[in-house]
Length: 82
Image 1 (cartoon, rainbow, N blue to C red):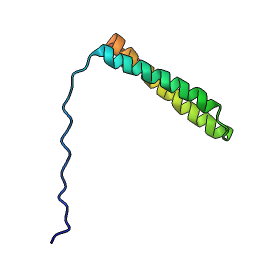
Image 2 (image 1 turned 45 degrees about the vertical axis):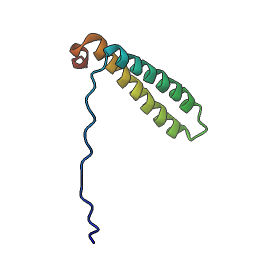
Image 3 (image 1 turned 120 degrees about the vertical axis):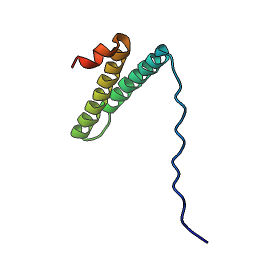
Image 4 (image 1 turned 90 degrees about the horizontal axis):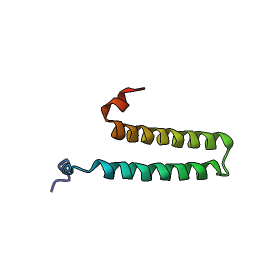
């Protein structure tokens, strides 16, 4: 009896073409969630340095989502303007 398990890569999920509006809607929902979490994180009863880092990381995520929305709204040109 062998205890060797063959390695198999999981099949890649099929690529589904989605509507730009649906992706934008998901990004807006994500943006709203990040903003709510940022407000709650700012009110945590943790050491100030930890709260500042947490909130800054969440604000960086908000910025990234906003950039993604800009790219969707303006096409490829928005991703190049940094």
